[in-house]
Length: 299
Image (cartoon, rainbow, N blue to C red; front, side, top):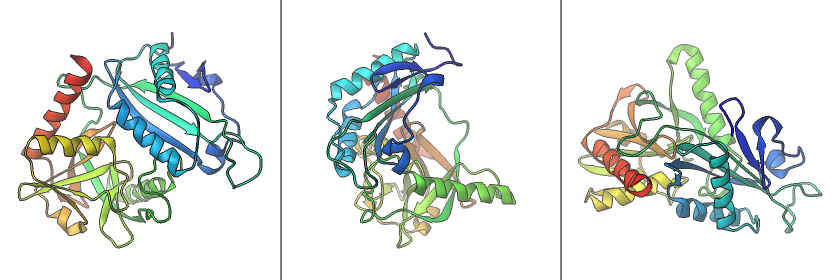
């Protein structure tokens, strides 16, 4: 059984201590970012929204022409084995599939021997009795780094190549070093200057009682948490509009929050120094999200 100093990873079908886990330097995931991944959460030993994650993983692999040949049942079994080996029920889970080691250079070969890596780490219990994984509401700043257009790299593909988000976060680090204060998330715009998403999150804001979010038809990675929030809003008869929004639209919001699998729903305290905060719709959706987690994973 693993402890905090010696977590167990799942690498190519084997459970190994993290200190012994290795991937070839010739692996295309390392060389080129030629890989797909999913960030998941286990609540009470249950992978929340597993089918939705599997569907998105397969869509990413299809976009990459990465025919890995692994079944959903196989991948789920590996995740369950990793959780059990680490004695975890409430956890962060990351599943990665790379194209593996191939001869030649840039051009991918159709025959794939994939590299599959799963690692987990503890996260607090979710649901109605859960604890937030974030210490405070988020401070957010816009950055000059633009979201890569879907015509260049499919926006909906969740790949190992995260340079776009890294550059955005690097801007924040530079700003923080220049006395701008600590900032939690970078908000990126598309090439036309319309708001798109955070470096690792989707954006929602409320104005005049309407929940708004940048459209997934734009340069946005549609998160699983984002989709759940839209479902919950529809069930609660909260009016929703997805569209293309200017920064000024968000700055004038009555409420705003970010979503991703780890944060769930996280209110935005300030955007570019302007106070926004959460509010009744944010609080209601957060409660409904917690209730769904509780009903799905703990009851």
